[in-house]
Amino acid sequence: MGNAPDAVKRLVDRFDQDRKVFLSGDYKEEQLRLEFLNPFFTALGWDMDNKQGLSETDKKALPEGSP
Image (cartoon, rainbow, N blue to C red):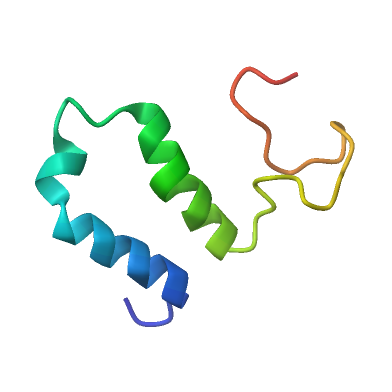
């Protein structure tokens, strides 16, 4: 993983530990987003929770279905 942030390395390690669970049909899309995707993008510097309080027009990351 070379230069990957430590948070990304931890996510990969966690995924590897329970790979069968995460690849099963019982693991839901919402769980994936909350447990892996949002933390991944946060580790890359994205403000996934809009902690900066930006207006809708200034946000860089918008939830699916947003204007």
